[in-house]
Length: 512
Image (cartoon, rainbow, N blue to C red; front, top):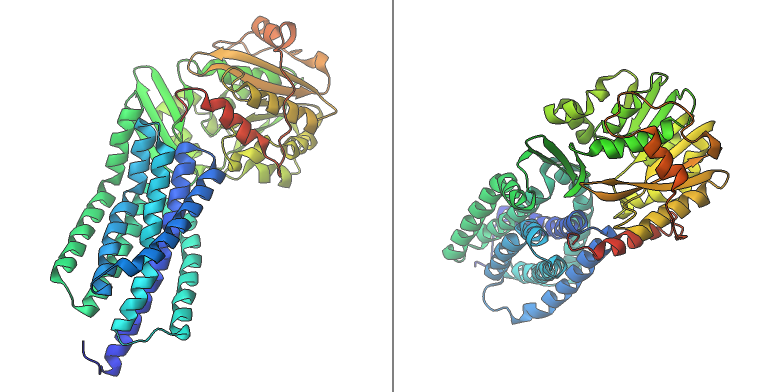
């Protein structure tokens, strides 16, 4: 390379080198976020997922920094090759994890190996980039190093904002990974264009970019193809939203909804669940007028509440607007919920239920909590003592609260924890645990709280129920109440429910 260069060449080189440093920084942080999010979605336990993703990746970066001295050859060529490998491993990380989750029992091991490999290759980047700077005639100095690290830290800020606000909601996890992989290759091409070294490496970069771009385009097809092996029935709707993966399947008369691979209902027996949840509470209040539903984005619980003519208003709070939109627009789901979201009595609030509960001044005759199971921190606050205390404040004097409480058979300790936490959060109320059998779920638990126990099921039941009746409810709630051991108390600062629930579920073969 020539020692003397024009001012214009130097300015172009500066832009190229520092732009490359910025893209490297953004890509490295986003890979960590993608790994943690993927493991959290697929495997559960987001604290452990992000801790492993961050810890193992940082450890790998340290290993990479130490190994870089063994790398021979032109630093720009070595840097480009490293970026190619990083793009292929990082870009395919979500795909590999998804396959591992669906078809193996070693998903945590594979997750850790991928995190380590990505970390090692990220660890190569800055040392190789510094050597490349030297090849451009810039001697290593505190000033140069400080500029590179400043760009690195600025890139971290950009990545931490771009990933949750733009990439994840717009592209989803798999396409976000391929998008970042394309950045790695772009960095390689920028450097190689200036250095003008090996044409073979330049060709490899172009080939890798073609592979990554093709996988980006085919990612939705790939994900659905893998899902076809995981889900038994044909998929009629599939979407990764900002909050969860929504999958709707249909086989003859059986429509099923899955959120993050977990079954939410089967149309063949969902009435057992939703009628029990609704009727137990609603028929324990005389002429209920105002009702709140936390969760219930499929519209099935609202369908049951609307069977009570005294109801004047329903506030339904579900954080995912894509879920409530699906409940309105999808023919299969709209048929199942009988168009409940088109009823003028129903007002949908697409926001966090915890925040809604603490911000609203409304009072309700019934609050029904129909949330997914507490497998991670995002959900744990909605199973906390503080949340149940706040719900108690939202209830009228005659009001009643009921919540789904996980399976009384598959997760008995989690069920006991929900019961004990409700009891602790609503000390002035009678707290009643009970369960019913739902063929697609197994034995399922509920916890209801009420001021006056004598008011339970004191009002008539709707006449158009498909499964539930007064005698059955009388038996499971009053005459044969479920025996339950005292559970631990879950709070905002000590969300015990997550560990207890996940430990309960680990013993079952179908739960990875």
